[in-house]
Length: 187
Image (tube, rainbow, N blue to C red):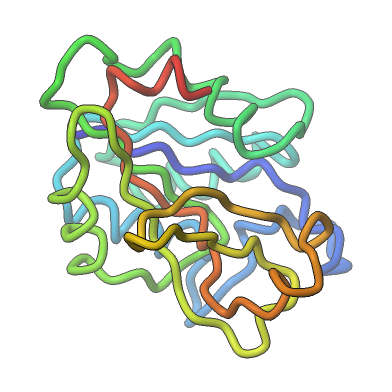
């Protein structure tokens, strides 16, 4: 299993010169919490995609986790989640059916090991596991669209949602587990 942590965002809304993922919760950077959760799963590799403040992020994390090998991947332009994941793709082993890729976000700390472990049990060769949650109100999140069999058929971003879709309270966390061989074709 490989983990890709997306940590390239600037965090403009935080009105800070510090990279978003270095803002602290409980005395530790958000990214540190995410790495600790990932390490509980004993991944073969951890890739961290950085952009804004990349050197500052790498220095802080390497100081806190000196014995953890991290593959640092640079996303020069922040062009979204899919683009960030594409930057890590050349370093991911996509040849093995036994190699799920867990995608986490450096600014989404406090995800429990049990939640992530359950996601890794789900994906089949051509499926992904997506962590969703109920939000009240759901404003600002992508809405989960399901068919009559409860299968996810779409994720509609807030700006693209119809009035009816904006009433849906099940939303996308962005955290997912993807079978590695399927990853290139899905990006």
